[in-house]
Length: 82
Image: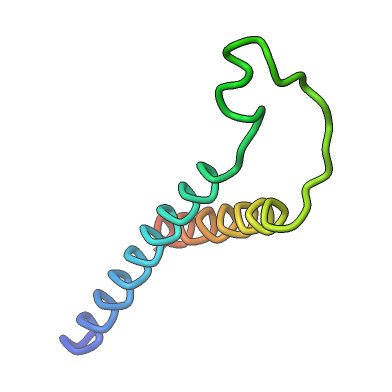
């Protein structure tokens, strides 16, 4: 393997690792943006539990969380295998 190819592979793997970190941070943000139970209302005895359909931004964040989790898992496996 030539020196140029080794450098290209190292750059490529560094790019993949950086992309994985970015996806991980975005995934954490999406998870933290999802609100379950209405915040502090459950602490003080209020806010009964009921099922509500996800709509609008909440649904988009939910789908983004799933997509980011799949991307993160795939990139992590790729890094381990390579």
